[in-house]
Image 1 (cartoon, rainbow, N blue to C red):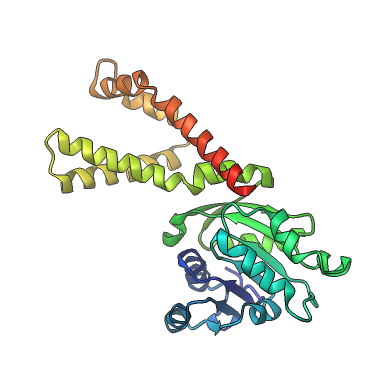
Image 2 (image 1 turned 135 degrees about the vertical axis):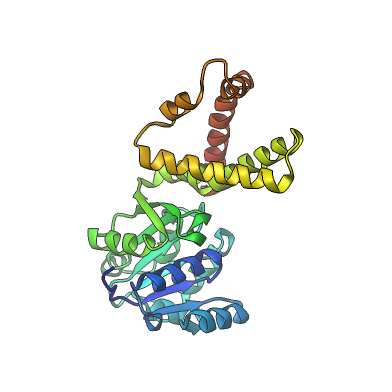
Length: 283
């Protein structure tokens, strides 16, 4: 991977921020000397500095002023305080072009703009593009799928810059921002649905007589193998399911129960409910 010649800062250094930092360093995209972190937890800053060799700052404002790309990697409820801190300090302006990348779930671009833009002149606003990203927790094992949306001031170069950084943790797909609530419901929350399915399979295996540890291995490896087959075969999930479902066989007996209990309808309704909740939280 080609070297990325920009300084990158992380306001917030939790699990997702660390996942991106570790992936970027492992990929060779950036040296540790060009990554800066700022976090309210001094112990956390010290840990990441020791582990990765990144630069540590106690001041969010100093990080914002000195980095070309700034990740907002804090919890949504922390965002108003962080943005207020950045935009209200004396001398707040954008001397050179700066890219903001927010990974705060449910915090829309318009709210970020409402803090960062009002006190800036038109030239400074154009130099402060904002990109919102919805990654998911498989980022921790470099298998994330991230939805990304940019505001009107982001250039193709800004978008490529964000995509290059985020591809270190997995796949990135661009969306209109109004679609990010559905992205949140499907892929942002999606790992929990998968874990719930595996949890249920293990419980079912145990109830029909399997050792819990054996049931866990069978369920996990089956899921992994099925996903791999889906990825490499080029066939649809429907076609692959039908190939496994022999008339009068064991799989058909199970599928009939799923269908009689409205399994697919339940999944559709669950994603719809999660999407609505994401919309509610986005305000």
